[in-house]
Structure formats: C-alpha cells, structure tokens
Length: 257
Image (cartoon, rainbow, N blue to C red; front, side, top):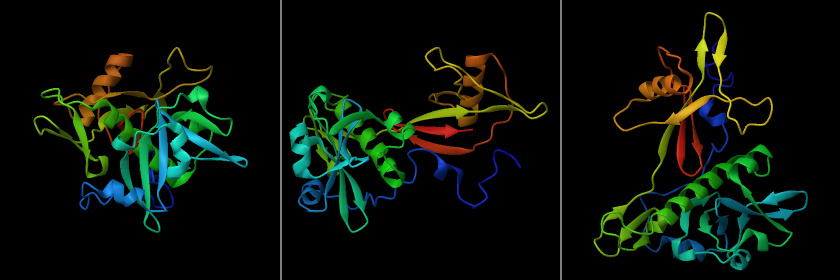
C-alpha cells in the first residue's frame, strides 16, 4: 500500500482534506448583473460575514453558526455593494459572502470573529459549510483588493453577482484569482523516511510538509523540485501528484505531491 493509493472507499483523496466538499450550485454560466439583488430578496438567503480575514460566528447553544440572515448581518455594517453571490444550496437557498466593517472588538458576546484555520482546527464549522466558507473568504479578499483597475486606476464595479469586476473608466474586466501552491512530502522509499520542515513559530513537536508558490513558466513537478532544494538543500527525482485543497489564505489552491 502506497501513500498515493486512494482511500479504501474509492473516494478521491482531495475529498478528505479541509475546506473541500463545497456542493453549492454556482450557476457560473447563468449570472445576470442583478442576480445578487434577486438572491438577497429570497427569504432563504443566508450570508457569510467576513471581517479582516475572520468569519463572524454566532453562538447557538453549544455550537456556532456561520450563516446570517440579511437582518442579522446589519449590525456588522456589511458592504453589500461588493457582496458576492457564492451559489445556491439545496432548496434553491442563496449563499452570499459580504465584507463587514464592524470592529471585532465591538462584537457582542454571542458573536465571535475567528480565522478560518482556527475554525477548522477547532471543528467549529462542519462539512460542506466549511468549503462554502473557504469560497466566501477567498472571494471577499479578492473583491476588496481589486477595488481599482490595475490598467488605469479607475474604480471597479461588481458584476455578475461579484464574480466579475469592471473598470468604470476603461471597461477592463477582472476575474477572481486562485494562486497555485505546491505542498510536498519528499519520501526516501529505500529507508522509509520522509522530509519535514519546522518553522520557528510552530508549537513544540509540530512539523509540516514543505511548500511554496508555483512560479510563472514552471510545471508543478519543477516547482516541487525547486522548492524542496531551496528550503532543504535536498535534490529529489520523480514527482507524483496526490491531491489538491482549496486554501482560503487568502485565495490559494494547495497542490499536494
């Protein structure tokens, strides 16, 4: 049995990583410019509130709820002009993401602002909703960092429910970005050992795989070899793909090898 073999249930390895399993119907090919307004008019609409890279979670009993109604999100001062329609959950229920401007320090005791990594590690949000939250965080971060045109500096406007931005001056179109990152486990098959790294800020006993951004004009395999040599001084040979993972920090795709 190899670490590259699929799980015994026949599922894809990528389906077992954090932030995977997002089942929203994104309707990418059927988005009019008023689709966000139509979605917000639905009583089934629920919104992810994202402020400074942290999700606002409401305490409900012993757990947390990451989704808010339009009424519930108002005290957080949401920027609905730049909200993003993520897609539709079962029952044609719109899922939306919005940046909120309220200082997290001013939140009531019933609401907590928590970063996505901590949400996953602590198990505060489960399953499919965790994948939706990753989509929400990535798109909100992209929209906030592309408020102006990189070509002429003009202000951009949200289109197609937030999945496109258009410059109000020159008409240049901007689309959401995903930054590819390779993350790899170098294995010595003869001695049954692997190579791990350790950052100075890690807690005692914690190690991780090596990782780095894929550079322009570079294959995934070459990026794995380059990053491994740069970070450890070790040269490796053949590279094999294993799985991928959406990583909302802020909008990367981890490519596991």
